[in-house]
Amino acid sequence: MTRFVIHYFSGTGNTWKMINYLGDQLQKFYSVSYVNIETVSSAHSPNFEIFEAIHIFAFPIYCFSAPDIVYRYINSLPRFQEQKAIILCTCGQMAGGALGLISRILATKGLEISFTDFFIYPDNFTQIMNAPPEDACRNLIRKTEEKLDLTAQKILQSNIPSRKPLLLLTIFSAVIGPFFKFMGRILLGKMYIADNNCNECNLCKKLCPVQAIEIKNKKPKWDWKCEACQRCINICPQKSIQTSLFKLLLYLLIPLLLFAAAYKFSSLCGTKQYILFISAALLWIPLSFLTAYLAEQPENRLRSLYASSITKHFRRYSVKSYINKLLEIKTMGSNVQQNKRDSFVRKCAATHLENIIEKTTSHDIKKGAYNIEKDSIAEKKEAVMVKYRKRSRISIEQYLPVILQAEEMKKQQMVSEQEKEVQDKPHPS
Image 1: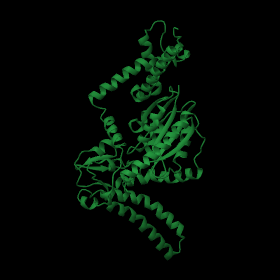
Image 2: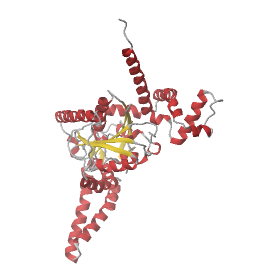
Image 3: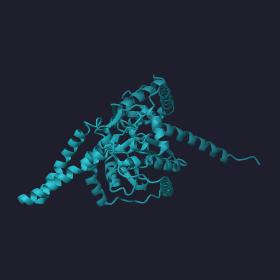
Image 4: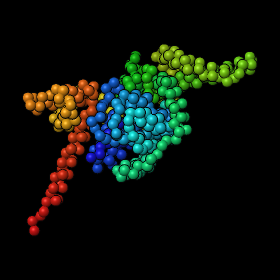
């Protein structure tokens, strides 16, 4: 039976909303598992070698490219063997060449890309522009869900058209993407400021996908690894997180001064303009980081100046159910949740280790993985589990969602077989 594994990252909930709607359609006929990229350690990513599945990778578009956290996750994955992949993304207007870039990376992982597409959702770039009104958001989501229905039908009917992303868009994103990755997203994070409405709830810090927020002097402060996912500014209960107008103007002033100086110098000295413009562009990068560092030093003393912003009057946009789900996931460290996780491990180990044993080859048995004649069934299972953990370098907890769905699929298959036996059984006349 075909199963789907959906790997996703979502900043404010658009991508999560998309894959849940699509997953509900697919789950009527197949097993569907979800892997939240931000909750998986890049150093210990799940190993899906034992699961024959169609993998769906879903993410939002940031500056015509996929988020950096998605690139890190995909690069940490092992090679796949004869498995297919579908790539879906959400965006406010257009996806650029992000689908093509991700397709090429996944192809190097041994995945066959069968389908790529993007879906339009309400724009959440509240740091720069106002979010759409609620009515406009609902109408846009309704239209997108109609397209998702058609996509689900194509996937279920295996009627997926072969479609390659435009090479020109891919090249465009390959140029713009690294600029945003190494400079744009970091400076956007440095433009955040918490005004005096902040009530120290620390929700922004708790839910930051890359732990880029620290609390200093009872106010949040953004470090150098911000993803620019727009989560913090959109979920703040007090709407206290703003884009600092002072910092924005400061960052814009640097390139203007540099290029103006280059133009003036070229007219005075006769030097070719393009040489000076390239030099100014190269000088702009380190100066921007230096300005970001220096600008945040007097932040606490001049907070009223720094907190002046047009985003105070902007609407916020996020999927509330997704934020609540994230809060539940982030608080998994409590004793109650820990007990649930432990019970999940025991339950999965009891029902799924037999499949792992079946995948242990006769060659491994001869090498002494376990002794069939002497060892008990429990000892066999434990020996194979230890062997598998060493090979995959992960613990069973990290691929629990996949194992649980596999267990549910097995139960559904047994029920369907029983129903078929009842139907085939002749009724007494």
